[in-house]
Length: 410
Image (cartoon, rainbow, N blue to C red; front, side, top):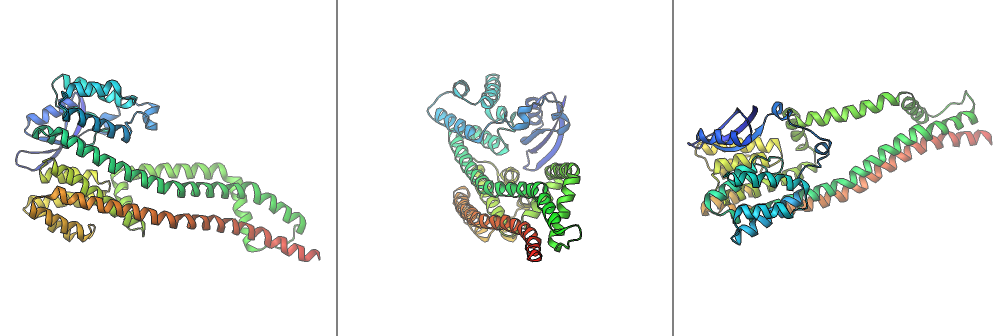
């Protein structure tokens, strides 16, 4: 038996959380449904997950379905369902023709479950690493309303937008990270291999009693320390980075990290725009699929990607439950720009919240692109200036005593 943690909506519209023991995920879903609850999220607890086999490919992410493959799968499934192809035949065809080994493995399980009479949403829910809560809930709403093809089109579009945003952020961060890596390697290389040799030459020329400038003494001291204690320093740095990354993955660490990045100038505006864009697009897609407001808010909260915004949206859902309009709640929260509350108010008045929020998402995604381009143009000269300063500092520590010794020789 495995332990599963669940978030589900009850018959009276309230959100319930808890845990249950079940033989597998499908049985857990059936148990929740029998209790009159509609599953929003169902995940195996960490203690149960440890029992599963773990491979080196899992560690490297080799068994994960790529976002591009998932988008293609969603678009093709949407096209086949729209053309009237039976769901089981469409899934079988996609399973047979996909080039992705990871996706083939997932679709094999989905085909088997659908053949056994399970709904598509319940089948997808068994693979949370591939199909997140937003995906599963939208498919469930599409099946209930009989508009699965339309929902799949919305999902494919949403995934393309999210994938495009992730790629732009990664590409913007790649160059600075490469420069940081080169700077660190250059620093250690100069300190361990170059500075000691130059220091030896200076001491040979000036003699043991030569008075060296303070900057040169500091550089030689750092170099000597690195040479004699590198076997302690390197493991400490690597261990510190690993511990930091592990801490960030914990609930407390993630909350602290997300709060910190929202306070860093220049970066905080990008994080805010990304979170708002994800909120608008995800909430719009769920509302357009016919998902209830409270359920849509709870699912969207977990899809935003920032714990601070997640907590704000969960708190907003509680106020909505008490009868308040979402637009008035968002308006009071400084983390959301005024335009979001204004557009939400228009959507609530006209009954077109999903359409209005799509425009908000498009606007903020363009803002993210502009902000990323701007910060990329700033980071490059700053990093080059930093590398130049480091090389200049080392050069000054070397040239100072050499110039002094040359004057003594004359």
